[in-house]
Length: 136
Image 1 (cartoon, one colour):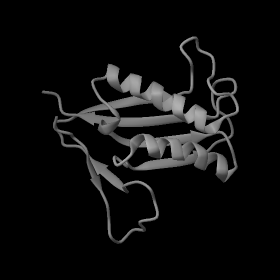
Image 2 (cartoon, rainbow, N blue to C red; image 1 turned 135 degrees about the vertical axis):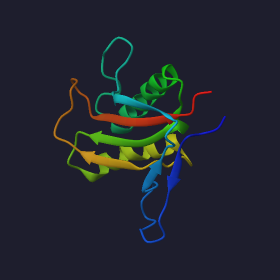
Image 3 (spheres, rainbow, N blue to C red; image 1 turned 120 degrees about the vertical axis):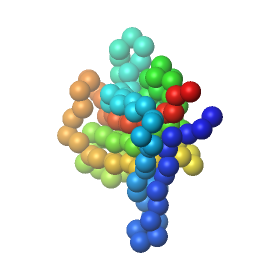
């Protein structure tokens, strides 16, 4: 299957970041704007309470379900924003490592942010994404 995404790197920017600095999608692609993926179980309860990595994993799982329902996959994601309810860098990194590992070589442009609070009780992580697909 042809992919719509082109990840862009620049030799003039640091290679320390674990993601591409930009991405493009052709004009004929269909963009998919996902709501923030939350670490919620099927019954609406918050998963992995107190566990940043566990909540990131559940948010990725839920994101994959939304992508599948949209006719896409993680390989079609063009960018992410990872929100972590913490001021501690270690907590942000714990969530980020799960996200990074989930995307593997498809290292899309991403923003990692510490925030004060998220919407659900005991929620520590939320992941926003945009995807692009080429429909047949």
